[in-house]
Length: 329
Image (cartoon, rainbow, N blue to C red):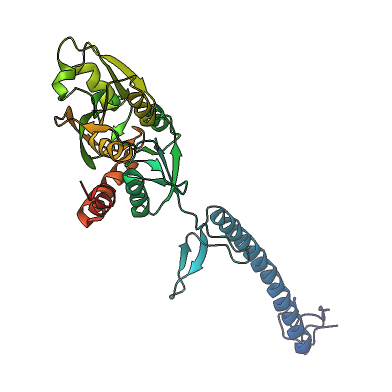
């Protein structure tokens, strides 16, 4: 193709002459150009779409990872009413299997020695019964816990608490300095007196007869009890015989192998009512208070036990339990 102005050859694809600059009569194929523009736009849009898709995959993938991490800690992502992201805990992740709700209550394990009526004993139905048992049950109810009774010799109650085999010990236990070395004690929940039981036909008429210097008779006590401790203090010359169970002490006095029994007054009344030929001396050997033994490693439980005792006293429930076993005394 030649320029109409200077006659020199020009490229047919351009609209002006390279030599003289005159415009040519060649018209561009607008349709073709528009088509090319469309192709270019479409191609650019495709690239942009692919790029956006890649970004979304990366972002969503990262969010999914974060979501999985959150779910492993029982936290799931949710939105509030304004569409803002929140974390709800603990709930099951969407689409996961329903989680079972554990409705079991914690168990309060109680160590006792169920041979000391009316505080702890096994009744005619083979059930644990007594003032202490009912107090333990009321405490467990207050704490919303199940109750489990572990029966053992009295000498094993404190060790059971110190080793963690039992949560608490309740067995007409007097809180003294020797026991405080091993366990902590709750606020007192019962006040008692230490007395002496003798045979009705015996000539012993006062506690002083036993505590006088030179008395060498045989006296029965329950091992590691306050009676055991007091006998060692006040009956210096007596023959102190120690037994695991109160029932063994009763057998000994009935067959006249011992002359007296040192025991708490409530248990003494029970013995006199259940066994003929026994009586209680008028004087009191000592006054004592019962507390609940708790591990030194569990101050939280100790405070809960104290709160329970305060509630039972303030609400009148402790008085109701007392009347159930000692109402006639």
